[in-house]
Length: 251
Image (cartoon, rainbow, N blue to C red; front, side, top):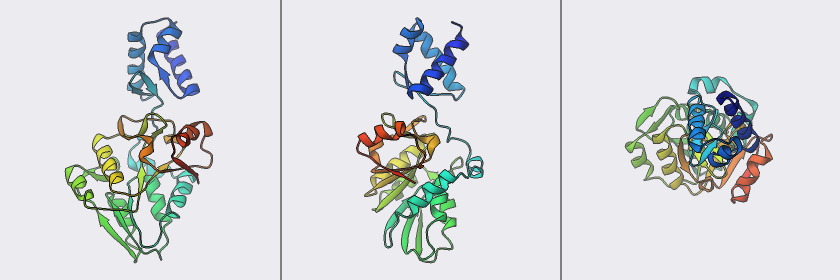
């Protein structure tokens, strides 16, 4: 079998099973594990999968620059954002992450809501200027331009002084075994710190983020108590997460 044919077959197996194991692929194609690892490296370099220990998972497609992702406003993002907004109750202290789905959440917060919003996203903060009863606390730090959020030691230090009722987390990958992930190491540290300072973590996950992984782990999928997904989300992707004890809310 030619290398190109083997790679195509690997991607077919990945699409069918949601993951591939190097040992099983080597046996199936009668080649060495070194050959399979080289194939996986090359496919990962093309952005077609995400390598993990022992094999690979589908690569998250939610890693485009912020401006490009913002221009792709889908009904799924709006539905997930609206469902998240309905979870915010008067008087709560909530942390809202950066990202385009979080932007939809903010759009659906009622003007009459009295609450405190903590965010490390300048975009979220500015979007709340016209909400007269929402107090906005902005976490400072180094600006990570890809997602337009602050990261770094200053952000994590500020986060350590907050006790929030709820944290709405944005991610690029949600997988039952690989957990929650994102495309930047420092951003992953900040998200983990925010989750640690909140009584409840709610992950916002549109379809392209499910059963996918990015390079940097935020934590196990059970770091979240709830994951809001699109109504059309594949049951095969959500059921293993529910079995881990995480509530799935279909928007």
